[in-house]
Amino acid sequence: MTAILRRELVTLLRTWTAMTVELGIALAFALLILLRWPTEAHVGLSGAEARQVLRVFGYGLLAGIILLVPAFPATSLVREKVRGTLALLLNTPLTPWSIYCGKLLGVLGFVAVLLVLTAPAAAACHALGGTSVTGHLLPLYLVLFVAAVQTASLALLVSSSANSTDSALRISYGLVLLLTIVSMGPYAVLPVGSGLRDAALWIRCLSPVPAVMEVLGQGDLGAHGLEAGAGAVGRFLFLGALTSAGFMLATVARINHRLFDRSRCAGVMTDDLSGRNRAWRKLVFLVDPQRRTRYIGPLTNPVMVKEFRCRRFGRSHWMLRLIAACAVASLALSCVAVLGVVDWGVSTISSILVVLQVSLLILITPSLASGLISAEREAGGWELLQMTPLSAAAILAGKLLSVAWPVFLVLCATLPGYAVMTYVEPALSFQVPRVLVCLVLLAAFAVLLGAALSSVFRHTAAATTAAYSVLLALCAGTLLFWLGRDAPFGHRTVQAALTVNPLAAALNAADAPGFAQYDLLPANWWFLTGACVALAAFLLARTWQLTRPQ
Image (cartoon, rainbow, N blue to C red; front, side, top):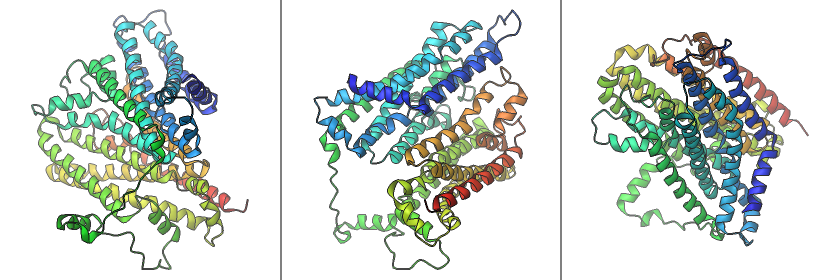
């Protein structure tokens, strides 16, 4: 185990990316404390301003852990398997537990270095007053470390099951989003007095966010003025340890030679199925992607057709399933919204819909767009495209359309929720178009950003990680200024930071509580439009460069 731990940790810390990230986060928090440090020789006796600085520090560190930790363990085991070195490890005297603990402790060592680098900023927060070591700082660091263990163990489980690094990253970030954000949804939408609210409270505590909020003195945030119940820290520590142990046991059980033996089902003839199964098969495979008797039309981009036929989500039946799931989820949320509109108000319900839509776009779009060019270069297909008479613009248009079309359909599938809300509250007819403009611009920006990063990085895993990092930093990172509004950041600073945030702009268009007082539109539209134009120009130039003879 020691050899694997040394190799994993030293290799990780030697990369310029890891060191840049750790030093950048440490310097950012130090700069935050310096900006808020009193210029006179006295501080406030109440400690309210110091606690607000600590909240920004705590939420920022939590966002950094959720954003950075899954990237390294998600590619650890699957990269060993692809390179063939995992089979060599299994032939050594090392046990599966030694291999797993070495890789897990390597990631946790990176997290420990990050937490140590941020300790001076935390000590400065304590020096400002209003906080205590045992009541705030130690519980905060304990919750963050358990969250890192939970996230890393989940990513390692995904890495043991995935077949490629890009799919491992995609699934890991999706499950982390499900665990940290979506798990708080049932408690947020269930009405007060519901019999399922106690179960939803425990599901909510699967996420580290409620525990951090309780440590920072905001335990009722997101509960619509109602106390979510004390003990969120204890619940999360228990559930975090329990889920981490489950992820560890499941991963260790998979680390053996059977990991390389993937038996495939022989299948069964359709005529041999029962009548019910045949009817279900006709419904699921309403559009069969294997029907290729019709030739590609002269006006159809062949690169787009190739992408649709080679990508799982490009195939018709998968697209239909995805769209149907989004439509059903949107209608379900609308029904819950109608039941809870009397208690919460229309603005709160529409805010929940906006957050879920933005989360869906952030989850799906980078995974589709970040492999458009890098996957071709990894697999050797880019050289084949170079030998075709297609121009760089035609290749780029076909690849972008293959991603834009599924994203557009997914976005349209979530519109029934707004239709129901508009029917319930006609005043939303002015807000909904503004929200849709924000979502469309976010979708276009995410597609172009993923494609641009795909042209820069040669490996799909690096492009996918960079795409998720940039989008999450833009949509979630800038919200730290909003959390620190009034202290230490003024109204003008918060508005300037939220102007580049498409999620904040959509919430502002929906008159969400806490965002309605900022003037973000149409400045955010101009920013996203300019960013899309710049990314499109860069992408076209980069594609033309890659299609030139080497």
